[in-house]
Amino acid sequence: MARSNQLTKMKIKIPSNNGETFSAYLKTPTSTPAPGLIIIQEIFGVNEVMRNIADEYAQAGYVAIVPDLFWRQEADIELTDKSESDWQKAFELYQNFDENKGIDDLISTMKTLKELPECTGKIGSVGFCLGGKLAYLMATRSQAECNVSYYGVGIEKNLDEAANIQNPLMLHLAEKDEYVSLEIQSQLKIELSNYPLVTIHSYPNVNHGFARIEGKDYNLETTNLAQSRTIEFFQKYLD
Image (tube, rainbow, N blue to C red; front, side, top):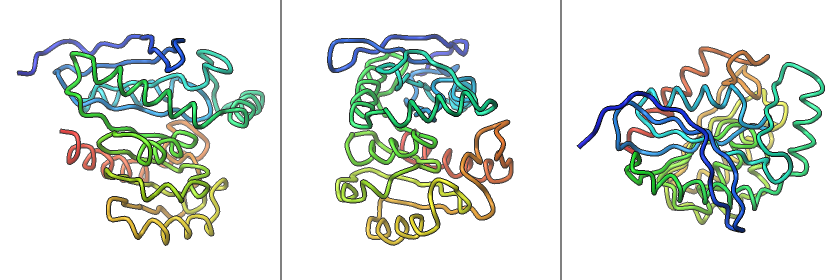
């Protein structure tokens, strides 16, 4: 039976697989238990944009969590896309990021989320940019019930893992993505078309980061369309 409570946000600690801990932003919905949703960060850390996305998913009825994946380099860093120095720092963190350890941390996050009394035990993920690539890898390496990738960068480097996908995966591609060429997008569409669990949506005339509210390439119409598809996807496989 669902129990009602106020929307609650907090920072929690998650044990990593090497015995250390890292932080995560957690937002629980007004009615629990509810499905869990891991929001996977961009290259700017667990910033206000990511927290706001978590808040929106909590409002939609999910236990939303945003783990700090840059903690091995610099814990609790928050950057924006508003300054050149933040962009430089973000790319430095991205270039030194270990994707395999990042997936380990996401799987640790999933374990912690499953154990929360507020969570039904069903877990999905949604990631953006760097997180979009990691959402794809969650589909190939974890038992998450479903995963959604927004403009993931570098997925083509791990297409050999697609055969491991056992649960539904949705990709949102921006046709004018300056970090994912049309040739790569075509490659993704062709090679992943062999996998019935994969759904790809392609959006014309929008750039990388189209769903980053207040970002330079934010597009309200496309964001709303992608979000409606994503929510329908989560309702189908998590609720």
